[in-house]
Image 1 (cartoon, rainbow, N blue to C red):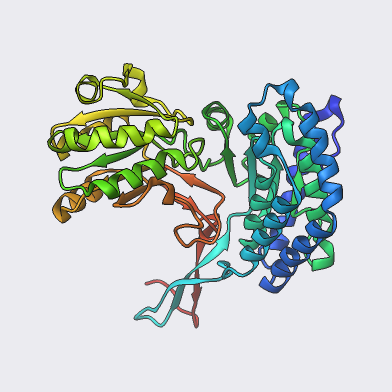
Image 2 (cartoon, rainbow, N blue to C red):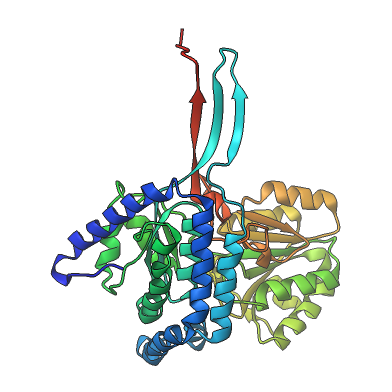
Length: 424
């Protein structure tokens, strides 16, 4: 953990990054057995040291009102024995995943006899900046170490005591597992300037990953000198096509909006084909109203369901992260795709239809990190898509897109074996 000298913060950040860079060299050649040993030891230590973690978390909870946290935010911040046990299980699940480092992606023998292969290698040092969710401390550290990367972690000030305690548990198990002691470091100051200093060290830090609100992500993108893995918004759509099964469509939109309305893969806009609007919308609207969802409709949808709140132009571009849903009626699949292209954030979009041709067009033309056919937007998640775990969801197109797990925390290099060949 970084011990800060407040009058020399920049130098301390450079020293932290230097230690991480040195640790990354050792991690790049660490055996999978050592990495898995660390994950298993850390999982056991979490359970043994539960009371220590709860004591630290209580200090954060006591201070939460001074930060103006909502009830939902305080719930995300709160630790209890059940959640700590789930975090321990999460470490064991990462330990059970295949090690991506050294995986051969392709290999061939060239006509001149050269043996050529492309293999996965760690990125190096990953700087993770996130808000007040202590579980991210565990998730980020586990995925970085398993993929052979050193981790620099910087959580929100609201969770500082919890993060310090969690980091202490993880750090204590590194050397006994045969890994470098600086493989996981925590930025243990709440001074926001530390983030800025670290973002200006591309020669030491290889990737920055912000997880949190749009303002945090935009700040990181603006200041970072290294690549950033990110998504700005999760403005996700569900389009109910003319060929939709109504029961299925209601079930999907309710799940996409209500199961966890405050996450990035929750639906924010419902689009309905005009041919089925009169039959589908009143039914779906009543179910959603019964679940305390505020519906903000365009003129056409309010003609079908008059009690909807009139939609403002900004609603089509808003990630509500709440029980609010924009509702619009479209005349065709083309219009639905055009709406998503204009207002979507490239995160997750879904179509509900029994028309295979419509589904194929939607999948081909909607340019998002995940496109769902007859399934909830909530499935755009590393665990749900078989990655085992994820460090975030990317809407970028370069290097990684969609849920980013172990493989997305690696790069590649080419290895060539010869017998004295020279190029003619």
